[in-house]
Image (cartoon, rainbow, N blue to C red; front, top):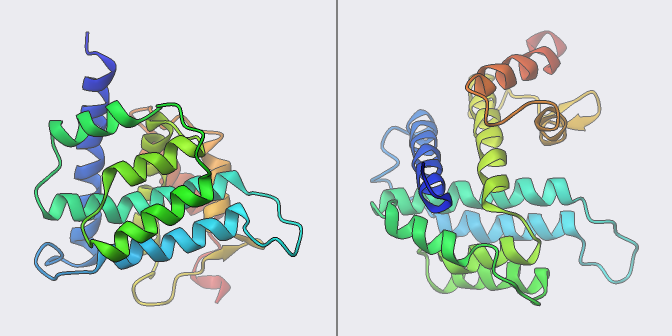
Length: 213
């Protein structure tokens, strides 16, 4: 029987495979194009804080589900950077597993800002700062995997419905597609062998389609 770290290492491999396949679909030469993944990371950090709340001059309620999906977006870009540098393997899995879940009294907003700062100072994705964001929320590696798989499926759905061409409709029935994804993740089992097919089918049923333009 595999121990928890070995299970996560296997899940990391699955996420890397899914991310590479998605990147191939978006741009076949992504490994050599020099895309600025670090820039996407710090911009996503700002979007994350908008969902969490940071404005002291008005009442704000944290939308934790959307915060977690923004963290997953950050992971998409960070993982792409790690894959491009051929760093995904047992060493990265070990580093993430050992740091995840450690007790912290740190402030979540400061952890997010530290990750953004590292992205601006050093373009290479900083695993420790990312895990600190998970720990201070908190968000487990299990949840990271489950929501990553869901968001990866949504990203594939977006691409197949004109996201890159600009024809994709992001708001359905008055709610963004991320909100629909959160609802479906609460109904489906991300660990099921048929999860990807079920989620794609449910997204298709909700999507208004080209007839709505």
